[in-house]
Image (cartoon, rainbow, N blue to C red; front, side):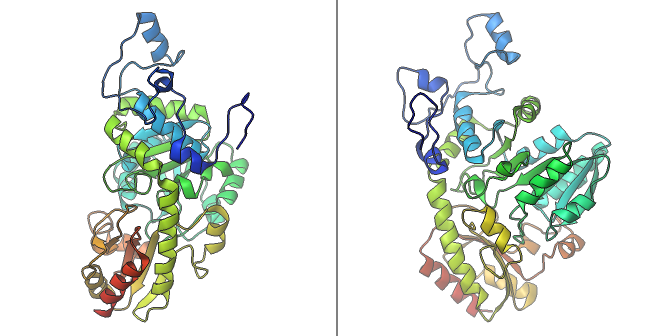
Length: 407
């Protein structure tokens, strides 16, 4: 910590998450609340039309209409921006998909080319194929197990963006941010976007490697309690953020103040939660790796993972997401997820309680991804996705053990 009071104090990200006070309008109040208040108002008084014009044109800071900005959201966004190392700031959105669609619609136009990892979250694939392609944006898909060299080979003269998930949903491949940073220096007009939902902004910060935009579904680890739907987008520079902020106001997909307050609350425990998720997941991954009824385990914290060294170099710890394949195909996979007792059979991830699902019949089922798409992405009928929660590790392993014994 820098103790020179003549300069702005720089804190670690643990301190930022736990208790940093956003230097906004609420701290100028004589009340000085310790917890950020919820500004449950849609409009704000202005002393004159000239002030309103200055706020709208961004010549002066201030608040006018809650769809444009509000102090509750700004305080939460400021914390995330500091966690991310986002010099351009952070925007909060009404969902993870709102964050993704904001980025794709803001920075891609007719005639542009997108290089995108495959597989990624099935909803994003559907958005790209069902909406973005309809705006005359060309897309090239690159296998998630490939590294930056393959992405670079796919770049064309009209390529404007490379989009990756790391760790990837659901096979847990990891991308090398330092090499993607070198890619941006070789192609200075190219935007590199990372969805880091599976890691959270605590475990990794891709913008620090020279990448441009970081996305999270805050419904997952950032929110961490399975009680909000939210998203965020963080930017490497203010120019990118200003363009996206204008589009966000027009799309009307900003986060509600109530959910922003809940998200702000959740960030206070993000460091301790992510460390516990990671510790538990490592124990579970090692247990699964030696079990006779499990034929493959995908967890970046295992040395057997093909991207283990990359994950170790750029992540504080390895998060709580594990995928694994059981012997016995689809029937065994479904039997397993329906046999757990402590763990909940449910979609989504990142909450305090452990969640398990069968991707081929749930998050990557027919309406979201075709059988051909699942085969292309390595999403087999026996694949299980497990979000390891904060329960006692012995209880978790006991639950998985009794469910596996039923196969």
